[in-house]
Amino acid sequence: MANVTVIPARRRRMQTNEEQIIPKIKVAAYCRVSTDSDEQATSYEMQVEHYTEYITKNPEWELVDIYADDGISGTNTKKREEFNRMIEDCMAGKIDMIITKSISRFARNTLDCLQYIRKLKDKNISVFFEKENINTMDTKGELLITIMASLAQQESQSLSQNVKMGIQFRYQAGKVQVNHNRFLGYTKDEDGNLIIEPEEAETIKRINREYLEGASLKDICDSLMADGILTGARKKNWIPSTVHKILTNEKYIGDALLQKTVTTDFLEKKRQINNGLAPQYYVEGSHEPIIPKHIFMRVQEELVRRANLRSGKDGRKKRVYSSKYALSSICTCEKCRDVYRRIAWNNRGKKSTVWRCCTRVEHGPGVCDAPTIPEEDLQAAVMKAINDVHGRKSEVIKQMEIILEQTVSTDYDERLADIDARMEELQLKLVDLNTTRLESEDLSRDVNALREEKERIMVAIAEDKGRQLKKEEMIRFLQEQTAELDEFDDALVRKLVEQVVVHGDGTFTVEFKSGELVEL
Image (tube, helix red, strand yellow):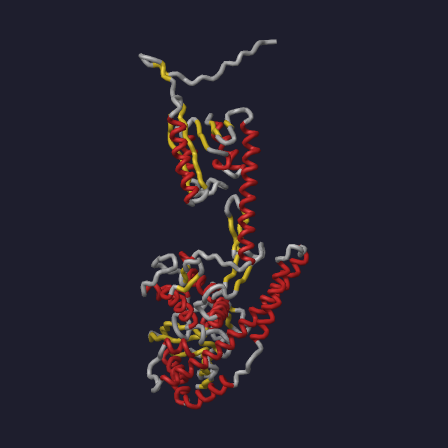
């Protein structure tokens, strides 16, 4: 049997005229703390100081750099800038060895940990973990690394689950946590409770008011920017999606829907909208409201109406809401039920502005022969209808006041109180530890059914309140307006007129938001 002699590897010696020089091992250290708390910040500084001293006092080592990520999670390496810089320097041949405190400081994701260790081993670069006393260049290193990294990942997952459970318990107790730094309209008091910021609250009220008056999301953005009003992020530029979020945020009515999103991958920190993936918690009256509930419900109703605008006899033709002109989307054809569109017309060299039925424009008079109306005639007809109501204002006001007084009282309050009591009873059963999974599913369905019933009642209340407000608005206009109007008033038409129907013979029916009808 042949004898085998192991010849150990040696570091290359560089020959000079005077002596042989052994190149020092180029050593780097990697530090990381996972939060930016004072305690962890101290730990961070101590790690940097420790490794600087630890490496420089070894005569065979040369300190390359201390790579330190502060306040960044270790579950993935995407956002760890210093870690990634260190790996780049390793690939560039600047580092021979990395020293770090422990596997959990290096990575809590088994896949990332092993991937980088193997990548470094291919370049003959070792990683030494102080706490576990593991050098990745040892034969036992990779097995131990695999085991320890798996444990670190389980620890991270367990921590994630504990945090999630803590949040769940706070939600069940109705404790609302909101980042108020970019939350327009609110700030926090010394106890961490949401309180109204008066100037910003006026912006929230203005957005809701302008939307109900007919302005589009873009119109509102332009209006706010023209007045130099800043967003919640203190930016000058407003975009429609920001306005939409404000209009649909239940926190402005003093309520809070908790757990709107959930973490679906604790390693990648991926979150997605909670569409039934986890329980949600709706807390009513958690803080002082800025917008009354009936106004909020009217806004939601208008959002749905604009998103689902249809025209035509079968209601299948999709239309896009336009707020450019007061009569856009509200002027309709009696024959085909389609909307009228404003058109710059050139008829035999004569230029004019007219309103034409969209069906006739798109498909010709064979499908719909609705009349073309000069804009000045249409505007004159609408103003004539307003003046007609104004001329009968004593009679109109009296009729509306009678209707308001005779409004039948409903049992909404009693029904809502009953629903709240039943929901509270069911939710107590849901958090009972003795409740089985099947029972929980049944209870959840019952709670959701009650919530939907409550929403229907809230919509009905908002609709009743809306009709009442529209009548009150007409009464105020008639009381304040002392003379007839001579010119077309765009803002007034937006406020008062619900619909203008163009008949086949060129006559009109003007329907007001208060319910009044005028035939012309």
